[in-house]
Each structure stands twice: as C-alpha cells, then as structure tokens.
Image (cartoon, rainbow over the protein chains, first blue to last red):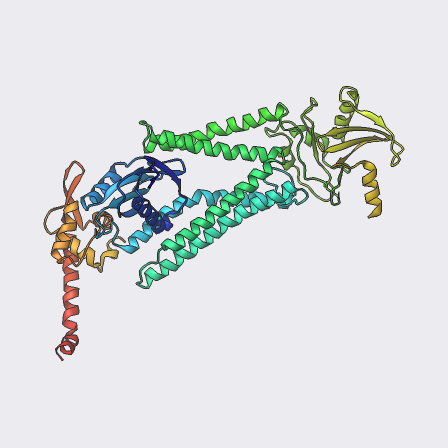
Length: 448
Length: 106
C-alpha cells in the first residue's frame, strides 16, 4: 500500500484563549497520536515535529510569574519547569505565560491539582490575552459614537452611511467586529462570576470543556474569516480608506512576523522584548502612513470616495450638489491640506449640523490640487476656477443642455460625470454617478 | 491578610507543612506528601510551587539553602503554630464525632 510520507515539521494555526485550555490540550494529544509533537511557535502558528505516534498527556499551565513578554523561560519560570520535570513532565513550549508540558505516563499526577488555583491562573492569563482587543474594541466603539454624534467623515465614520455598497460592507465589518468582542467580553464576565460564586459555595469551578472550547474556536474562526472576506472584497471598491485600512492590517501582520523573528533571536529577553513591543509600532506606523501618502500623492488611488450629501438617491443614480456652506473660510484655510491623511481626516474636525450638511470633498489625481475640502464655498469656487482656467489642459468642453440656460463644462472622473454650471453669481458643480446622463437624472427627478 | 487565609488548612497544605517539619528540597516535597498520606493525597508541581510561594509570603516556611535552582525549605514557628492548631481542630472534630463511632459500631 502506498503510504504518504509524513513531513518532518508542520505548522498549524490555532486560535484559542487560555480558558479554552482543555480543547488545546486535547488538540495536542490528537496531534501526538498522529505522530506530531508540539515543538515551537512562530507568529500565529504552532510548530509540530514528527515523532513516534503515541498517546501522550498534555498539560498547559499559564504560569503566574511569567510575563506575556517572555520569549523564553526566565529564572522563575525555569524553577517552575524544574518542579514539573522532576514530577515526570517534559517541557515542550514556552510562549509568554503559557507553558506546555507532556508526559508519556498517562497516570502521572496533574501539574495543577488545585482546581481553584488553576481557574485563577487561567482567568488571569485569559484576561491579559484578551485585554488589548477589548480596549481596541472600546476605542472603536467610542470613535463610532463620536462620529455618529458629530455626523462627520473620518477613518471611523463608516457605520452611519448606507449609501454605497462600500459603506454597507464597512458598516457590517465594524459593527460585527465590535459586537463580536463585546459578546466575548460578556461571556468572559459571566463565566468568571458564575465560577466565583461556585468557589464561594465550596464547589469546584467549571472549566470550559473540550467540546465547548472547540465550538467557540470554530465560531471565532468562521466569524473572523467572514470579516476578512468582507474586508478583502471591499478592496475592489478601490477607495482610499479601505486601502489605508488594509495596509494597516498588513502592517500588523508584518509586525507580528518581525516580532516572532526577534523573539527567537539571541538578544531576546523580557526587557528587550518590552522595548521592541513598544518601539516597533512607533517605527512602523509612520512608515505605513508615509507609504499610504506616497501612493496617494502619486495618484495611485484615482479618486476619493465620499458618502456625503446623497440627498437624492435613486436606485442607480445619485446627485451631489455643494451648496449652503456655513463654515468660515479661515477655519478651512487653517486646516485644509495640513492633515497627514488629507481630506478624509480633515473633514472630521468640522461638526456637521443642520446648516452645514452639504459638504463633500473632491480629489482628482490628474490635478495639481490633490484634495480639496469643499465645505467652504470660497474654496469650492477656487477649485472650480482653477479647473476652468486649465479647461483645455484637462479636456473640459463647453456644452449646452436643455435643463439649464447657463454655460456648462463637463468632465469625467472614473464612473462619475461632473457638470460645472456657471451662472451670474456662482459656479456650481453637479456630479452624476453611474452610466447615466444629466438628462436621465432630470427625467428621474421629475418622475418622482 | 495573608495569614487569615491559612486559618483552616486544606488537605494538601496540611501535608506540605508536615513534610516541611524536616528540611526538604522543593521537588522532594511532592514524594514526601505522597509517602505521608500513603498515596492518598497528591500535590501537583504547579500546585506545590504556588503553595510554597504563599507559605513564604505568610512566613509559615523559610528558605534554608539554595543550590543552583534547587531550593530547600523548613517550617517556621508560625507555621508550626498553624499546623498544631489544625491538628487540634481535626482531633476535636474526631472527638465530637463519637455519635458517628457509635453508629458504625451498630
């Protein structure tokens, strides 16, 4: 019979929290029976080395004296490992607080025979593991609520617009992300309080069983996978914000890989790891933002996406007009083009209210003016004046339409057609999205 | 505060303190406890490590010598007091249970 040759080393992604320790142990035991012994880790993966297929008992301990920054056992942890090894357990992996042991003697005494102590260790380990994500989630939630209250557009203002496919996707993405981690927090607190009461009543704490742990792990994998697909598909919308977000995700992934390499190096210890963990994001973030800005300035994004002012939205058509600007000129001049991430961030400084709800920004990579914030009529006029001054350069053609007596210049940016209407006292710009003409739009408006 | 938590000793705590009536190296305590309790009580290395830590903080035991990573401990007078109290409490419980003895003897 043909037998498939086993690889010497394999890697498996395993997402599980300390409280789901039983399902982790069970997974390692299953791998050992299949001939792979847990031997190391790198970034988000666990490494397994080929071994004699055998039943082995695994025990994972979240050692309370170890730090999450430990890449290898420090003095205290070494002492603890000595205790365990003298009791017949073999140490096979050390990642932060997590210490993994196995034994071939299936009747060997467990490392932690005090269930209350084990519960306390696991809860402490679990809390510290999840805390950064909960804080991040809380921060996002806070930012979302602020954005909703101020009704402005910034990197966090995805959730309250449902005017485009992109907006809907981002709403689903952010709210699902926040809700998921909020649910996990509630679950954790319920678990903790229930067990605390059990301990108080002299009962043994109830740890998450293998089946429960597997279910939670599956749920998490499916959920995060689905979110990633939404995020990935949003990229095809080609917007600046999603691109910036995607770069951030890539940077975090890259950072994890670099961190993993550093943790394995000779100079790695608790102190250097803490310094690395603090310094690395400080170095990477400006690089990431710099890269984004470079692409932005080199015209790589084409046009910006704007969710503003979809006052007349029909099935396929939306019109944007820029009228009724109430923000003072000085305020805009103070901030315009000063922000690092250009107008998307600039807009966030302007509170939107009833008097000032029609602003939107413009960008055209072919123009010298990369981004213009047009909540201010003066700036919009200046933008249009510049555009008109260079009309031949940018291929603006004067056209006549039956929906207006004024002069109209048209030009196209990606999927939208812009109509610059010059009247006696003002210049207006109308934008029509999709494969429709202004006549179609007028017809549609009249029919409604 | 730490001392209050040892007013009543758990079974493993009681045996660990008995084992430390003689100077013992940390890892030898586990086998000593097993020997003393005729294999009835087993203390895992993780449990023992945390317990020694707590006893040291409560000054119920003290470190006697360090050889590399190997540390030896012995009970202190405060630890002895605690273990005597526990012994007396258990004895009192036995004496108070004379009715149970009668029940057993039928």
